[in-house]
Length: 461
Ligand code: UD1
Ligand code: MG
Image (tube, rainbow, N blue to C red; front, side):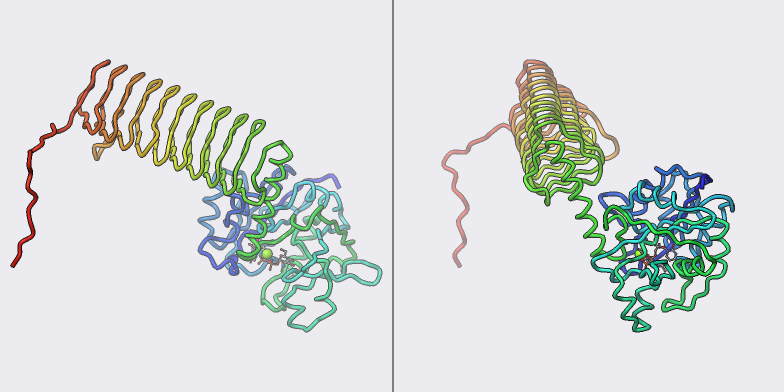
């Protein structure tokens, strides 16, 4: 049936079983809302219209999808999946096919959806089913002796009716189906809420199709997780592991060494060169690029970061919105914040924080320091406990530390200030004025020693 494809994504439900303020379809899976996953698969089919049925948490859901090309349809109150489908159908015209996708089946692949849609014609309804090891909670597919689909019975209704035969069926309804639009509209108009949940069930249209003499064709996904519905935090966690196993597998296939494929989390895009090593417990989000021979120590968190060839990031480092050059050493316990741009062979040691600063080749800040809004030259050595005082309470100011400067320990560089090329700042200095190139600048109280000093003695009463 060569005709227009429209898609309805059901996303209005509260997701009561999540026990959360966040609407179910916005619960994050691998760093993106559940709904974003299904919408990405749907978009690959290039439908002429995609309607997202929203209701519970409508403001949050529409905000999360701001900028996308979908049409929203408001379902209020949320009176079941059948009601939601009817609401979603309102802005869709009668010619063509409508594909219905639930917003809580994030791992559905576009190939599976395309195969399902291809089954539909004027007299054929297509339903995606799956034989589940554990069918608990899902609607069961009831077939006659000839194998034709007769109806779907919801788990709760089978329980309420004490229907052991239906409960024993392990072929389940994925919630994903496709139908000729005109027929679907008529069927949805006839739904009634005579069931355990007092709602309009989308699943009841299957029985109508069979009564109307439509063929109910079924297709199955390549694997079970594609149609796994996420209704509670346990299912969400199980699916997260599934996604992460897939991410780890892809990394291993591409030659990345993972200390343990079960202990890595990719919540965005991780691009790796050759001979990259990633230790346990690392979390990657946004877009992270690790060039050849990069080594990431245990428990590092990287977001939107690019790490150059042969650089090592030691344990417990937190890097966000930064670039690091080649052959650099970062951490352990380093923090690189937004706008940290580190050149080749830069060393950043433990408890050093760098924000919105450029460090040129070979600059080192090895212990307990802060560089904010600073321009740091080549080979600069920045001592332990030193900080740039970049904020006057209202505005940020820059510190310029030129090539080959040595800043001693525990210095405060009060910005705006420049330390000239080759200058040395004595430990414990508070620098408020520009320090000339090549000079030793010291700005601290002079040491006084009082000989034979008697400490006060305790009073005896
Ligand atoms: C549904 C199916 C069940 C199937 C399962 C697959 C029905 C009656 N049951 O059950 O046969 O095995 O999915 O995962 O269809 N929604 C709305 N408006 C509403 C109610 C729900 O938009 O009024 C949306 C939800 O946001 C969700 C989807 O529809 O994305 C499915 O709803 P949910 O409550 O999760 O249905 P299940 O009980 O999982
Ligand atoms: Mg569900």
